[in-house]
Length: 142
Image 1: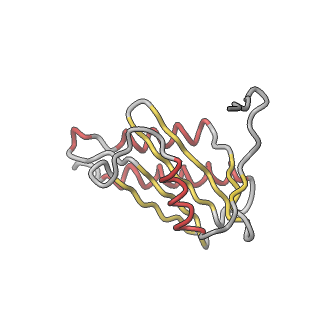
Image 2: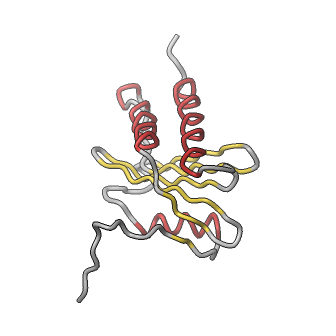
């Protein structure tokens, strides 16, 4: 008997949740993962609701690997569409995952606007704290 897609994706979603717990380093409640993905590129964004603000955290290599595995699990050969956007939330000890597909949204490149819209829909106007740029970064001036 052929496996249902959730027979494959269910355990992967659990592994993603475990890795998110490691990324956050503590209480998983209030974690929000926003991912945009396409052939050859991925943009995962991990956020944590801290009550008065939202903190953007660095993802991990393992998290990216798990996301790729989940994306490739939806084989187009089997008649399944691969998702373009995943929103994964942990709240009250449970995770909730939603997907958006190419026929719903064209994701050819990373969009900060889509990410910000997802954050505002989830957290309202709470400020978002981003990590400082890496030491190897530089600022462009006009």
